[in-house]
Length: 277
Length: 124
Image (cartoon, rainbow over all chains, first blue to last red; front, side, top):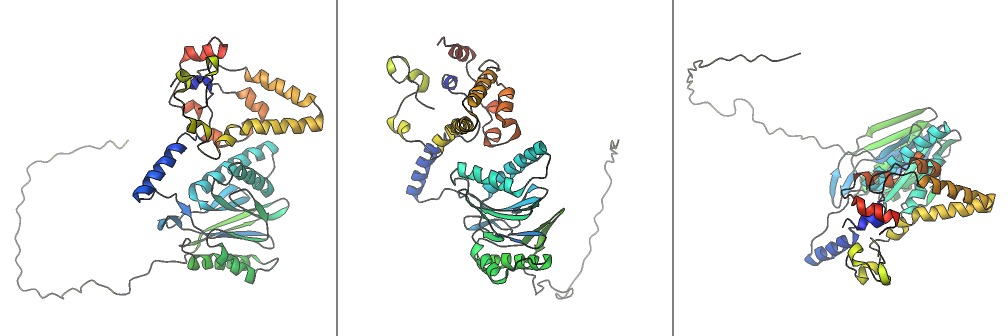
């Protein structure tokens, strides 16, 4: 085996060595009727809207693993740069790693240009990376930020296509959220109206889609200020029990009472000094 | 893990193990081939654009510099930093999956030093 490594130089990056083995294993397992473990997804509702001075990004907080809720309060709004944030839907690991890599690249780029990074740069980097992997990286993103040219909002699909729009939704609950946006979106809204609109859109996704749930996170980005409201609204609070099942004192009648004193004698006494320096 | 054509044009079993037609025909993953050649294709694309814009001298000069920088390395079985090559190519200002996953410096197998040097010097 050592002779093999002579010929090819070692390269970093993805290794496809186990793909054939995995394909064989999957075939065997489905023949037996079991399932291979599913990747953790964020069946999600994420959305963003541009208002007068900036933009608001919103996301729910449920991460699912097949039919089970894996994380009741996960954070789907990722930091890219001080003025740019990105919501991620799809496979949780993919969105996490992709946004971290792009954040690092953008930081290096901004250090080399000594300027605040632009949203279009992040968008271009993301779409080039996702296209390179032909959709195998399952990350559907809503990218938003405020730079020297104003507020910008992009939606990025796993295969690498992007759209620049004033309001976008992604994820399994995107249709419910888009219905709310299409009804109530107006150009040049105020900040409070925009926050309420995004909150209602995410709530529509949470209540009408099984893959979304728990709380609503908001991120308001304006020139020079970022408000990361986590949680902004706890839409699904666990219910409080209305009845008390504890018995009152005196429910059971006392018939007899006998007290037995235990005589304890001191056998040995040791003192251990602690070193508190 | 490609085929290594040894003497007489036959598959070199000693160096690359047993062969199986099925294994060699189809790639194990849709991305395998595209990822293997990605850097080469990017370079080809960039050089041809550069040739169209600035003339033949530009890619020639760059490739000469790359060839010179590629020779600044330690012996084959040791990890070299490729600092000059990375700076020329601009890889020192970006991070991608090559830097995070499967770092060659952390690989569990190390090559046989004598064989690797003989191979590099063409004595094999």
